Amino acid sequence: MLNSLKALLRRLLGRILRVDRLATLKRRGLSVGENFYMQDGCVIDAWHCCHIRIGNDVTLGPNVTLLAHDASTKRALGFVRIAKVTIGDRVFIGAGSIVLPGVSIGNDVVIGAGSVVTQDIADGALAAGNPARAIGITAEYFARKRDEMSGVPCFGEEYTLRVGIDAKRMMEMNERMKDGVGYIV
Image (tube, rainbow, N blue to C red):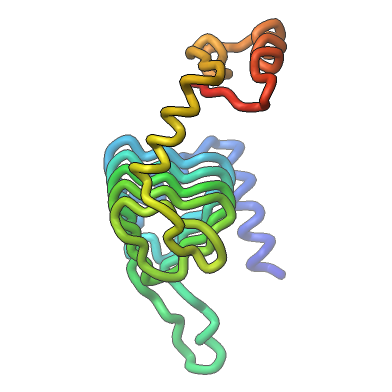
């Protein structure tokens, strides 16, 4: 009870003071390459982040969890199992996915939303599921999406929250996306 209260207070204080969680994890040994983006709600194993290596051009969707430890052995064995996690370059890990200890994800990989990555994923794989497994090749996936783009509306940066999209543009986007699909910068 006391530990959970301390953790809650630590999180609240961090939000109030706007503590940079990524900077804290890096100080603890997390290795992160260039152009790393972590969306809201992501959890990177804070106590064992020194066993996690993230390459260049990696995006973690919302609520992704990266674990480098498995505490299921603690009570029975008296020890927590730890293992390295390696994520290559140009990787996208979809919302709500979990990457377990000991996993290596190659370069140019897309992991589908909600996946549980329990084993290594090879370079160029499109993987999804629980447990995650290769279901395609990213080059083919991107080719299909590139073809799809030619028949649906594409929107520029002025349609993003980053620039400050207004209600008129939001309505326009919805009207132009009759089939429910579009692309945005």
